[in-house]
Image (tube, rainbow, N blue to C red):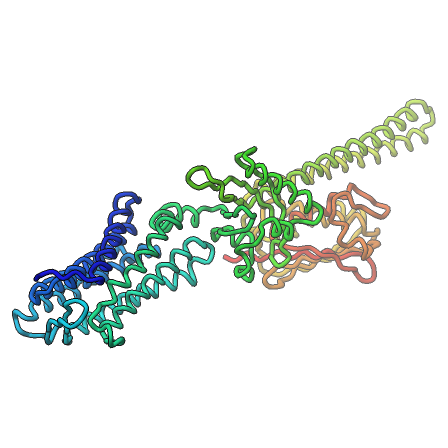
Length: 601
Protein backbone atom coordinates (compact mmCIF):
# COMPACT_ATOMS: atom_id res chain seq x y z
CA UNK A 1 0.00 0.00 0.00
CA UNK A 2 1.61 3.28 -1.14
CA UNK A 3 -1.10 5.76 -0.11
CA UNK A 4 -2.65 6.14 3.35
CA UNK A 5 -5.40 8.79 3.70
CA UNK A 6 -5.92 10.20 7.21
CA UNK A 7 -7.79 13.12 8.74
CA UNK A 8 -4.51 15.02 8.65
CA UNK A 9 -4.19 14.40 4.92
CA UNK A 10 -7.67 15.78 4.33
CA UNK A 11 -6.94 18.79 6.53
CA UNK A 12 -3.73 19.54 4.61
CA UNK A 13 -5.54 19.02 1.29
CA UNK A 14 -8.05 21.72 2.31
CA UNK A 15 -5.24 24.09 3.31
CA UNK A 16 -3.48 23.40 0.01
CA UNK A 17 -6.58 24.34 -2.02
CA UNK A 18 -6.92 27.54 0.02
CA UNK A 19 -3.29 28.33 -0.81
CA UNK A 20 -4.01 27.65 -4.49
CA UNK A 21 -6.94 30.09 -4.37
CA UNK A 22 -4.77 32.82 -2.80
CA UNK A 23 -2.14 32.10 -5.42
CA UNK A 24 -4.48 32.41 -8.42
CA UNK A 25 -6.98 35.10 -7.31
CA UNK A 26 -4.53 38.05 -7.12
CA UNK A 27 -2.70 36.77 -10.17
CA UNK A 28 -5.86 36.86 -12.29
CA UNK A 29 -8.10 39.52 -10.76
CA UNK A 30 -5.90 42.06 -8.96
CA UNK A 31 -3.73 44.84 -10.43
CA UNK A 32 -0.19 43.76 -11.25
CA UNK A 33 2.40 45.50 -9.11
CA UNK A 34 5.64 44.77 -7.32
CA UNK A 35 3.65 44.09 -4.14
CA UNK A 36 1.24 41.64 -5.80
CA UNK A 37 4.10 39.83 -7.57
CA UNK A 38 6.03 39.29 -4.34
CA UNK A 39 2.81 38.24 -2.61
CA UNK A 40 2.18 35.65 -5.34
CA UNK A 41 5.74 34.31 -5.05
CA UNK A 42 5.44 34.08 -1.26
CA UNK A 43 2.13 32.21 -1.46
CA UNK A 44 3.58 29.96 -4.19
CA UNK A 45 6.37 28.93 -1.80
CA UNK A 46 3.86 28.12 0.94
CA UNK A 47 1.68 26.26 -1.59
CA UNK A 48 4.64 24.04 -2.59
CA UNK A 49 5.31 23.38 1.09
CA UNK A 50 1.66 22.51 1.81
CA UNK A 51 1.12 20.40 -1.33
CA UNK A 52 4.31 18.36 -0.84
CA UNK A 53 3.59 17.89 2.88
CA UNK A 54 0.05 16.73 2.03
CA UNK A 55 1.49 14.07 -0.27
CA UNK A 56 4.25 13.15 2.21
CA UNK A 57 1.83 12.32 5.04
CA UNK A 58 -0.34 10.39 2.56
CA UNK A 59 2.31 7.92 1.40
CA UNK A 60 3.90 4.97 3.20
CA UNK A 61 7.18 4.57 1.32
CA UNK A 62 10.32 6.00 3.01
CA UNK A 63 12.19 6.91 -0.19
CA UNK A 64 9.08 8.60 -1.61
CA UNK A 65 8.60 10.57 1.61
CA UNK A 66 12.24 11.75 1.50
CA UNK A 67 11.77 12.83 -2.14
CA UNK A 68 8.65 14.81 -1.13
CA UNK A 69 10.66 16.41 1.69
CA UNK A 70 13.13 17.62 -0.95
CA UNK A 71 10.20 19.10 -2.90
CA UNK A 72 8.92 20.81 0.28
CA UNK A 73 12.28 22.48 0.78
CA UNK A 74 12.07 24.19 -2.59
CA UNK A 75 9.20 26.22 -1.09
CA UNK A 76 10.58 26.27 2.47
CA UNK A 77 13.97 27.73 1.60
CA UNK A 78 12.66 30.33 -0.85
CA UNK A 79 9.79 31.36 1.43
CA UNK A 80 11.65 33.59 3.91
CA UNK A 81 13.57 35.68 1.28
CA UNK A 82 10.39 36.20 -0.77
CA UNK A 83 8.47 37.06 2.41
CA UNK A 84 11.06 39.74 3.27
CA UNK A 85 10.88 41.17 -0.27
CA UNK A 86 7.09 41.19 -0.06
CA UNK A 87 7.23 43.10 3.24
CA UNK A 88 9.76 45.61 1.89
CA UNK A 89 7.53 46.31 -1.11
CA UNK A 90 4.39 46.45 1.02
CA UNK A 91 5.96 49.02 3.37
CA UNK A 92 7.03 51.21 0.41
CA UNK A 93 10.78 50.70 0.77
CA UNK A 94 11.37 51.05 -2.96
CA UNK A 95 14.98 52.14 -2.50
CA UNK A 96 15.67 48.69 -1.00
CA UNK A 97 13.59 46.50 -3.30
CA UNK A 98 15.28 47.93 -6.40
CA UNK A 99 18.77 47.08 -5.13
CA UNK A 100 20.26 44.30 -7.33
CA UNK A 101 22.22 42.99 -4.34
CA UNK A 102 18.97 41.57 -2.95
CA UNK A 103 19.57 38.51 -5.12
CA UNK A 104 22.18 37.55 -2.50
CA UNK A 105 19.31 36.82 -0.10
CA UNK A 106 18.81 33.58 -2.05
CA UNK A 107 22.44 32.49 -1.84
CA UNK A 108 22.29 30.88 1.65
CA UNK A 109 19.03 28.99 0.82
CA UNK A 110 20.65 27.71 -2.37
CA UNK A 111 23.68 26.40 -0.45
CA UNK A 112 21.41 24.81 2.14
CA UNK A 113 19.30 23.15 -0.56
CA UNK A 114 22.39 21.69 -2.24
CA UNK A 115 23.49 20.31 1.12
CA UNK A 116 20.02 18.79 1.58
CA UNK A 117 19.81 16.95 -1.75
CA UNK A 118 23.39 15.69 -1.41
CA UNK A 119 22.94 14.75 2.23
CA UNK A 120 22.59 10.99 1.61
CA UNK A 121 24.16 10.58 -1.81
CA UNK A 122 27.42 12.26 -0.73
CA UNK A 123 27.13 10.94 2.81
CA UNK A 124 28.10 14.21 4.58
CA UNK A 125 24.92 14.17 6.73
CA UNK A 126 25.23 17.92 7.40
CA UNK A 127 21.52 18.52 6.94
CA UNK A 128 19.97 15.32 8.27
CA UNK A 129 21.99 12.97 10.46
CA UNK A 130 19.37 10.21 10.22
CA UNK A 131 15.84 9.63 8.92
CA UNK A 132 13.52 6.80 10.03
CA UNK A 133 9.94 5.90 9.05
CA UNK A 134 7.53 5.66 11.99
CA UNK A 135 4.39 3.58 11.55
CA UNK A 136 2.88 3.96 15.04
CA UNK A 137 1.62 7.51 14.51
CA UNK A 138 -1.77 8.41 12.96
CA UNK A 139 0.00 8.54 9.59
CA UNK A 140 3.38 7.35 8.34
CA UNK A 141 5.76 10.01 9.60
CA UNK A 142 9.49 10.63 9.66
CA UNK A 143 11.69 10.73 12.74
CA UNK A 144 14.53 13.05 11.77
CA UNK A 145 17.77 13.90 13.55
CA UNK A 146 18.87 17.33 12.37
CA UNK A 147 22.40 18.29 11.36
CA UNK A 148 24.34 21.55 11.53
CA UNK A 149 23.22 22.77 8.08
CA UNK A 150 19.57 22.37 9.08
CA UNK A 151 20.01 24.64 12.10
CA UNK A 152 21.98 27.09 9.96
CA UNK A 153 19.07 27.19 7.48
CA UNK A 154 16.52 27.55 10.31
CA UNK A 155 18.45 30.41 11.91
CA UNK A 156 18.72 32.21 8.55
CA UNK A 157 14.98 31.80 7.90
CA UNK A 158 14.13 33.09 11.38
CA UNK A 159 16.34 36.13 10.84
CA UNK A 160 14.55 36.93 7.57
CA UNK A 161 11.15 36.65 9.28
CA UNK A 162 12.25 38.76 12.27
CA UNK A 163 13.65 41.44 9.96
CA UNK A 164 10.37 41.49 8.02
CA UNK A 165 8.36 41.72 11.24
CA UNK A 166 10.56 44.64 12.30
CA UNK A 167 9.74 46.59 9.12
CA UNK A 168 6.03 45.88 9.55
CA UNK A 169 6.06 46.98 13.19
CA UNK A 170 8.11 50.09 12.42
CA UNK A 171 5.73 51.08 9.64
CA UNK A 172 2.73 50.47 11.90
CA UNK A 173 4.12 52.53 14.80
CA UNK A 174 5.87 55.41 13.04
CA UNK A 175 4.79 55.67 9.40
CA UNK A 176 1.05 54.99 9.20
CA UNK A 177 -0.55 57.03 12.00
CA UNK A 178 -2.79 58.93 9.62
CA UNK A 179 -4.06 55.88 7.72
CA UNK A 180 -6.37 53.52 9.57
CA UNK A 181 -6.88 51.22 6.58
CA UNK A 182 -3.15 50.69 6.09
CA UNK A 183 -2.68 50.11 9.82
CA UNK A 184 -5.38 47.45 9.72
CA UNK A 185 -3.61 45.67 6.88
CA UNK A 186 -0.27 45.90 8.70
CA UNK A 187 -1.75 44.42 11.89
CA UNK A 188 -3.24 41.50 9.92
CA UNK A 189 0.12 40.96 8.25
CA UNK A 190 1.93 40.88 11.61
CA UNK A 191 -0.58 38.44 13.12
CA UNK A 192 -0.39 36.15 10.09
CA UNK A 193 3.40 35.84 10.52
CA UNK A 194 3.20 34.91 14.20
CA UNK A 195 1.28 31.63 13.77
CA UNK A 196 3.44 29.78 11.20
CA UNK A 197 6.68 30.80 12.92
CA UNK A 198 5.24 29.57 16.23
CA UNK A 199 4.27 26.26 14.63
CA UNK A 200 7.76 25.89 13.17
CA UNK A 201 9.44 26.53 16.52
CA UNK A 202 7.21 23.86 18.12
CA UNK A 203 8.13 21.42 15.34
CA UNK A 204 11.90 22.06 15.23
CA UNK A 205 12.48 22.04 18.98
CA UNK A 206 9.81 19.37 19.69
CA UNK A 207 8.13 21.48 22.36
CA UNK A 208 4.85 19.51 22.44
CA UNK A 209 5.81 15.88 22.88
CA UNK A 210 2.54 14.11 21.87
CA UNK A 211 2.52 15.71 18.40
CA UNK A 212 6.22 15.68 17.47
CA UNK A 213 5.24 13.63 14.43
CA UNK A 214 3.21 16.55 13.04
CA UNK A 215 4.64 19.63 11.30
CA UNK A 216 2.41 22.45 12.56
CA UNK A 217 3.92 25.06 10.23
CA UNK A 218 1.88 24.25 7.08
CA UNK A 219 -1.19 23.61 9.24
CA UNK A 220 -0.89 27.06 10.82
CA UNK A 221 -0.71 28.52 7.32
CA UNK A 222 -4.49 28.18 7.31
CA UNK A 223 -4.71 31.13 9.73
CA UNK A 224 -2.54 33.19 7.35
CA UNK A 225 -4.70 32.25 4.40
CA UNK A 226 -7.93 33.13 6.19
CA UNK A 227 -6.55 36.50 7.31
CA UNK A 228 -5.22 37.30 3.83
CA UNK A 229 -8.54 36.28 2.26
CA UNK A 230 -10.36 38.64 4.61
CA UNK A 231 -7.86 41.40 3.79
CA UNK A 232 -8.30 40.87 0.03
CA UNK A 233 -12.08 41.09 0.08
CA UNK A 234 -12.80 43.47 2.95
CA UNK A 235 -9.99 46.01 3.32
CA UNK A 236 -8.52 46.31 -0.19
CA UNK A 237 -5.35 44.29 0.36
CA UNK A 238 -3.14 44.49 -2.78
CA UNK A 239 -5.63 46.99 -4.18
CA UNK A 240 -5.65 50.25 -2.21
CA UNK A 241 -2.43 50.04 -0.23
CA UNK A 242 0.27 50.62 -1.09
CA UNK A 243 -0.29 51.08 -4.81
CA UNK A 244 -1.12 54.31 -6.67
CA UNK A 245 -4.28 55.32 -4.79
CA UNK A 246 -2.49 55.30 -1.43
CA UNK A 247 0.43 57.23 -2.90
CA UNK A 248 -1.96 59.88 -4.18
CA UNK A 249 -3.76 59.93 -0.81
CA UNK A 250 -0.54 60.64 1.07
CA UNK A 251 1.33 62.81 -1.41
CA UNK A 252 -1.41 65.14 -2.64
CA UNK A 253 -0.85 68.71 -1.51
CA UNK A 254 -4.40 69.09 -0.16
CA UNK A 255 -5.72 67.58 3.03
CA UNK A 256 -7.96 64.51 2.56
CA UNK A 257 -10.37 63.26 5.21
CA UNK A 258 -12.68 60.23 5.23
CA UNK A 259 -15.89 60.50 7.27
CA UNK A 260 -18.32 57.68 8.03
CA UNK A 261 -22.13 57.83 7.98
CA UNK A 262 -22.17 59.08 11.59
CA UNK A 263 -19.90 62.01 10.67
CA UNK A 264 -16.95 60.45 12.49
CA UNK A 265 -13.43 60.92 11.16
CA UNK A 266 -12.10 57.47 10.17
CA UNK A 267 -9.09 58.37 8.04
CA UNK A 268 -7.00 61.35 6.94
CA UNK A 269 -3.70 61.95 5.21
CA UNK A 270 -0.66 63.63 6.72
CA UNK A 271 -1.51 66.99 5.14
CA UNK A 272 -4.95 67.01 6.80
CA UNK A 273 -3.37 65.91 10.08
CA UNK A 274 -1.04 68.92 10.03
CA UNK A 275 -3.77 71.30 8.86
CA UNK A 276 -6.34 70.34 11.47
CA UNK A 277 -4.51 69.00 14.49
CA UNK A 278 -1.43 69.78 16.52
CA UNK A 279 1.08 67.05 17.38
CA UNK A 280 -0.47 66.52 20.81
CA UNK A 281 -3.88 65.82 19.30
CA UNK A 282 -2.96 62.79 17.17
CA UNK A 283 -4.13 60.20 19.72
CA UNK A 284 -7.57 61.82 19.86
CA UNK A 285 -8.09 62.37 16.15
CA UNK A 286 -9.82 59.20 14.98
CA UNK A 287 -13.51 58.48 15.54
CA UNK A 288 -14.16 62.12 16.43
CA UNK A 289 -17.34 63.73 15.19
CA UNK A 290 -16.08 66.10 12.52
CA UNK A 291 -18.93 68.56 13.13
CA UNK A 292 -17.96 68.82 16.80
CA UNK A 293 -14.38 69.55 15.78
CA UNK A 294 -15.46 72.22 13.29
CA UNK A 295 -17.64 73.75 15.99
CA UNK A 296 -14.72 73.89 18.44
CA UNK A 297 -12.32 75.49 15.98
CA UNK A 298 -14.64 77.92 14.18
CA UNK A 299 -14.91 81.53 15.29
CA UNK A 300 -17.76 82.18 17.68
CA UNK A 301 -19.53 84.68 15.43
CA UNK A 302 -19.99 82.25 12.55
CA UNK A 303 -20.05 79.08 14.64
CA UNK A 304 -23.67 77.89 14.63
CA UNK A 305 -24.51 79.24 11.20
CA UNK A 306 -21.51 77.55 9.53
CA UNK A 307 -22.04 74.20 11.30
CA UNK A 308 -25.70 74.22 10.27
CA UNK A 309 -24.61 74.91 6.69
CA UNK A 310 -22.19 71.95 6.74
CA UNK A 311 -24.82 69.67 8.34
CA UNK A 312 -27.32 70.65 5.66
CA UNK A 313 -24.79 70.06 2.89
CA UNK A 314 -23.91 66.58 4.20
CA UNK A 315 -27.59 65.70 4.58
CA UNK A 316 -28.23 66.64 0.95
CA UNK A 317 -25.41 64.33 -0.15
CA UNK A 318 -26.87 61.47 1.92
CA UNK A 319 -30.36 62.01 0.49
CA UNK A 320 -29.01 62.22 -3.07
CA UNK A 321 -30.16 65.83 -3.59
CA UNK A 322 -26.59 66.91 -4.20
CA UNK A 323 -23.47 65.17 -5.49
CA UNK A 324 -21.06 67.45 -3.62
CA UNK A 325 -20.86 70.28 -1.11
CA UNK A 326 -18.36 73.13 -0.82
CA UNK A 327 -17.86 75.88 1.75
CA UNK A 328 -15.19 78.08 3.32
CA UNK A 329 -14.19 77.61 6.96
CA UNK A 330 -12.43 79.94 9.37
CA UNK A 331 -10.59 78.07 12.15
CA UNK A 332 -8.96 79.47 15.28
CA UNK A 333 -5.82 77.77 16.65
CA UNK A 334 -4.66 79.76 19.72
CA UNK A 335 -1.64 77.46 20.21
CA UNK A 336 -0.21 78.10 16.74
CA UNK A 337 1.96 80.89 15.39
CA UNK A 338 -0.67 81.62 12.72
CA UNK A 339 -3.80 81.50 14.84
CA UNK A 340 -6.47 82.18 12.21
CA UNK A 341 -6.55 79.77 9.26
CA UNK A 342 -9.01 79.63 6.36
CA UNK A 343 -9.91 76.43 4.49
CA UNK A 344 -12.00 75.52 1.51
CA UNK A 345 -13.87 72.25 2.20
CA UNK A 346 -15.17 70.13 -0.70
CA UNK A 347 -17.17 67.03 0.28
CA UNK A 348 -18.25 64.20 -2.04
CA UNK A 349 -19.98 60.87 -1.26
CA UNK A 350 -18.02 57.66 -0.71
CA UNK A 351 -19.76 54.62 -2.15
CA UNK A 352 -19.09 50.88 -2.38
CA UNK A 353 -19.92 48.60 -5.28
CA UNK A 354 -23.62 48.65 -5.98
CA UNK A 355 -23.77 52.39 -5.27
CA UNK A 356 -24.10 51.79 -1.52
CA UNK A 357 -23.38 54.98 0.45
CA UNK A 358 -20.82 54.43 3.24
CA UNK A 359 -19.51 57.91 4.06
CA UNK A 360 -17.86 61.04 2.72
CA UNK A 361 -14.53 62.13 1.31
CA UNK A 362 -13.51 65.69 2.13
CA UNK A 363 -10.79 67.78 0.47
CA UNK A 364 -9.34 70.57 2.62
CA UNK A 365 -7.39 73.34 0.88
CA UNK A 366 -5.58 75.98 2.93
CA UNK A 367 -6.71 79.32 1.47
CA UNK A 368 -5.30 81.50 4.26
CA UNK A 369 -2.83 83.25 1.93
CA UNK A 370 -5.59 83.91 -0.59
CA UNK A 371 -7.93 85.31 2.08
CA UNK A 372 -5.14 87.49 3.47
CA UNK A 373 -4.40 88.77 -0.03
CA UNK A 374 -8.09 89.51 -0.55
CA UNK A 375 -8.27 91.25 2.82
CA UNK A 376 -5.14 93.28 2.07
CA UNK A 377 -6.51 94.20 -1.35
CA UNK A 378 -9.80 95.28 0.21
CA UNK A 379 -7.98 97.36 2.82
CA UNK A 380 -5.92 99.05 0.12
CA UNK A 381 -9.09 99.67 -1.89
CA UNK A 382 -10.78 101.16 1.17
CA UNK A 383 -7.72 103.28 1.88
CA UNK A 384 -7.58 104.58 -1.68
CA UNK A 385 -11.28 105.40 -1.48
CA UNK A 386 -10.66 107.34 1.75
CA UNK A 387 -7.73 109.16 0.13
CA UNK A 388 -9.91 110.18 -2.81
CA UNK A 389 -12.64 111.37 -0.44
CA UNK A 390 -10.08 113.30 1.62
CA UNK A 391 -8.50 114.81 -1.48
CA UNK A 392 -11.89 115.75 -2.91
CA UNK A 393 -13.08 117.24 0.39
CA UNK A 394 -9.93 119.22 1.15
CA UNK A 395 -9.44 120.41 -2.42
CA UNK A 396 -13.03 121.61 -2.50
CA UNK A 397 -12.47 123.53 0.74
CA UNK A 398 -9.21 125.05 -0.47
CA UNK A 399 -10.69 125.98 -3.85
CA UNK A 400 -13.75 127.58 -2.22
CA UNK A 401 -11.45 129.67 -0.02
CA UNK A 402 -9.31 130.62 -3.04
CA UNK A 403 -12.44 131.53 -4.99
CA UNK A 404 -13.66 133.71 -2.07
CA UNK A 405 -10.35 135.53 -1.72
CA UNK A 406 -10.10 136.03 -5.48
CA UNK A 407 -13.60 137.56 -5.52
CA UNK A 408 -12.66 139.86 -2.62
CA UNK A 409 -9.45 140.84 -4.40
CA UNK A 410 -11.41 141.61 -7.58
CA UNK A 411 -13.90 143.79 -5.70
CA UNK A 412 -11.46 145.82 -3.59
CA UNK A 413 -9.70 148.97 -4.71
CA UNK A 414 -7.50 149.21 -1.61
CA UNK A 415 -3.90 148.20 -2.23
CA UNK A 416 -3.33 146.96 1.35
CA UNK A 417 -6.47 144.84 1.32
CA UNK A 418 -5.48 143.44 -2.07
CA UNK A 419 -2.06 142.47 -0.68
CA UNK A 420 -3.69 140.67 2.24
CA UNK A 421 -6.05 138.77 -0.06
CA UNK A 422 -3.22 137.81 -2.40
CA UNK A 423 -1.14 136.66 0.59
CA UNK A 424 -4.04 134.52 1.77
CA UNK A 425 -4.42 133.13 -1.75
CA UNK A 426 -0.69 132.30 -1.77
CA UNK A 427 -0.93 130.48 1.60
CA UNK A 428 -3.95 128.49 0.49
CA UNK A 429 -2.31 127.69 -2.83
CA UNK A 430 0.72 126.32 -0.93
CA UNK A 431 -1.58 124.25 1.28
CA UNK A 432 -3.35 122.85 -1.79
CA UNK A 433 -0.05 121.98 -3.45
CA UNK A 434 1.16 120.35 -0.20
CA UNK A 435 -2.01 118.29 0.03
CA UNK A 436 -1.65 117.03 -3.53
CA UNK A 437 2.07 116.33 -3.04
CA UNK A 438 1.51 114.38 0.20
CA UNK A 439 -1.21 112.17 -1.29
CA UNK A 440 0.87 111.67 -4.44
CA UNK A 441 3.88 110.83 -2.30
CA UNK A 442 1.92 108.19 -0.40
CA UNK A 443 0.79 106.51 -3.61
CA UNK A 444 4.23 106.78 -5.23
CA UNK A 445 6.05 105.31 -2.22
CA UNK A 446 3.60 102.40 -2.14
CA UNK A 447 4.33 101.73 -5.81
CA UNK A 448 8.07 102.00 -5.25
CA UNK A 449 7.97 99.55 -2.36
CA UNK A 450 6.15 96.96 -4.46
CA UNK A 451 7.91 97.43 -7.79
CA UNK A 452 11.60 98.08 -7.11
CA UNK A 453 14.23 95.48 -6.27
CA UNK A 454 16.28 95.74 -3.09
CA UNK A 455 19.90 96.84 -3.34
CA UNK A 456 22.66 98.22 -1.13
CA UNK A 457 22.22 101.82 0.09
CA UNK A 458 24.53 103.90 2.31
CA UNK A 459 22.27 105.43 4.98
CA UNK A 460 24.98 107.95 5.95
CA UNK A 461 25.23 109.20 2.37
CA UNK A 462 21.42 109.51 2.10
CA UNK A 463 21.22 111.54 5.34
CA UNK A 464 24.01 113.92 4.27
CA UNK A 465 22.49 114.40 0.81
CA UNK A 466 18.97 115.17 2.14
CA UNK A 467 20.40 117.62 4.70
CA UNK A 468 22.04 119.56 1.84
CA UNK A 469 18.78 119.36 -0.11
CA UNK A 470 16.86 120.88 2.84
CA UNK A 471 19.40 123.63 3.62
CA UNK A 472 17.07 126.37 2.28
CA UNK A 473 14.30 125.20 4.64
CA UNK A 474 16.69 125.18 7.62
CA UNK A 475 17.97 128.66 6.72
CA UNK A 476 14.48 130.12 6.14
CA UNK A 477 13.22 128.93 9.55
CA UNK A 478 16.48 129.69 11.40
CA UNK A 479 16.62 126.09 12.59
CA UNK A 480 20.03 124.68 13.49
CA UNK A 481 21.00 121.13 12.62
CA UNK A 482 23.24 118.88 14.70
CA UNK A 483 24.48 115.86 12.74
CA UNK A 484 26.50 112.92 14.08
CA UNK A 485 27.23 110.10 11.62
CA UNK A 486 29.93 107.41 11.57
CA UNK A 487 33.05 107.75 9.45
CA UNK A 488 32.44 104.43 7.67
CA UNK A 489 29.50 103.65 5.34
CA UNK A 490 26.22 102.60 6.95
CA UNK A 491 25.05 100.08 4.38
CA UNK A 492 21.50 98.71 4.40
CA UNK A 493 19.37 96.65 2.01
CA UNK A 494 16.53 98.82 0.66
CA UNK A 495 15.18 100.44 -2.49
CA UNK A 496 14.72 104.01 -3.68
CA UNK A 497 11.82 104.59 -1.27
CA UNK A 498 14.37 104.97 1.56
CA UNK A 499 15.04 108.49 0.29
CA UNK A 500 11.37 109.53 0.67
CA UNK A 501 11.30 107.98 4.13
CA UNK A 502 14.25 110.08 5.46
CA UNK A 503 13.02 113.21 3.68
CA UNK A 504 9.58 112.84 5.24
CA UNK A 505 10.96 112.55 8.78
CA UNK A 506 13.30 115.54 8.38
CA UNK A 507 10.49 117.65 6.89
CA UNK A 508 8.37 116.80 9.90
CA UNK A 509 11.20 117.77 12.26
CA UNK A 510 11.53 121.17 10.52
CA UNK A 511 7.75 121.63 10.45
CA UNK A 512 7.26 121.15 14.19
CA UNK A 513 10.48 122.79 15.45
CA UNK A 514 10.28 126.43 16.62
CA UNK A 515 12.31 129.17 15.01
CA UNK A 516 15.94 129.10 16.25
CA UNK A 517 15.35 125.52 17.42
CA UNK A 518 17.65 122.55 16.82
CA UNK A 519 17.06 119.36 14.84
CA UNK A 520 19.43 116.57 15.95
CA UNK A 521 20.41 113.62 13.78
CA UNK A 522 22.34 110.66 15.20
CA UNK A 523 23.30 107.65 13.07
CA UNK A 524 24.97 104.83 14.97
CA UNK A 525 25.59 101.11 14.75
CA UNK A 526 23.34 98.96 16.92
CA UNK A 527 24.04 95.34 15.83
CA UNK A 528 22.52 93.80 13.87
CA UNK A 529 20.97 97.13 12.75
CA UNK A 530 21.81 100.69 11.86
CA UNK A 531 19.94 103.07 14.15
CA UNK A 532 18.91 106.57 12.99
CA UNK A 533 17.55 109.04 15.59
CA UNK A 534 15.90 112.29 14.40
CA UNK A 535 14.95 114.68 17.22
CA UNK A 536 13.12 118.02 17.15
CA UNK A 537 12.28 120.62 19.83
CA UNK A 538 8.61 120.95 18.97
CA UNK A 539 5.58 120.30 21.19
CA UNK A 540 6.19 116.55 21.19
CA UNK A 541 3.67 113.72 20.80
CA UNK A 542 1.37 112.61 23.66
CA UNK A 543 1.91 109.03 24.88
CA UNK A 544 -1.63 108.15 23.86
CA UNK A 545 -0.81 109.00 20.23
CA UNK A 546 2.72 107.55 19.90
CA UNK A 547 1.41 104.41 18.16
CA UNK A 548 -1.69 105.91 16.59
CA UNK A 549 0.23 108.57 14.64
CA UNK A 550 1.35 105.84 12.21
CA UNK A 551 -2.24 105.07 11.22
CA UNK A 552 -3.61 106.72 8.05
CA UNK A 553 -5.26 110.16 8.49
CA UNK A 554 -4.10 110.57 12.10
CA UNK A 555 -3.00 114.16 12.69
CA UNK A 556 -2.93 116.48 15.70
CA UNK A 557 -1.73 119.90 16.91
CA UNK A 558 -1.87 123.25 15.22
CA UNK A 559 0.10 122.21 12.14
CA UNK A 560 -2.17 119.39 10.98
CA UNK A 561 -1.52 117.62 7.71
CA UNK A 562 -3.26 114.80 5.90
CA UNK A 563 -2.00 112.23 8.41
CA UNK A 564 -0.38 110.12 5.67
CA UNK A 565 3.27 111.06 6.10
CA UNK A 566 4.09 108.81 9.07
CA UNK A 567 1.98 106.03 7.56
CA UNK A 568 4.32 106.14 4.56
CA UNK A 569 7.35 106.03 6.86
CA UNK A 570 6.19 103.01 8.89
CA UNK A 571 5.09 100.98 5.86
CA UNK A 572 8.45 101.66 4.19
CA UNK A 573 10.51 100.66 7.23
CA UNK A 574 8.52 97.47 7.75
CA UNK A 575 9.06 96.63 4.08
CA UNK A 576 12.81 96.93 4.73
CA UNK A 577 12.43 94.54 7.73
CA UNK A 578 13.07 97.40 10.13
CA UNK A 579 11.09 99.07 12.89
CA UNK A 580 10.25 102.60 14.07
CA UNK A 581 9.44 104.00 17.51
CA UNK A 582 8.97 107.38 19.17
CA UNK A 583 10.54 108.80 22.33
CA UNK A 584 10.25 112.17 24.04
CA UNK A 585 13.11 114.62 23.45
CA UNK A 586 14.63 116.65 26.28
CA UNK A 587 13.46 119.21 27.25
CA UNK A 588 10.67 119.15 24.64
CA UNK A 589 9.95 117.57 21.30
CA UNK A 590 9.90 114.10 19.80
CA UNK A 591 12.61 111.66 18.71
CA UNK A 592 11.88 109.21 15.89
CA UNK A 593 14.05 106.10 16.09
CA UNK A 594 14.52 103.96 13.00
CA UNK A 595 16.29 100.58 13.03
CA UNK A 596 17.07 98.85 9.72
CA UNK A 597 19.14 95.64 9.37
CA UNK A 598 22.74 96.11 8.25
CA UNK A 599 23.72 94.95 4.79
CA UNK A 600 26.14 92.02 4.98
CA UNK A 601 28.41 91.49 1.98
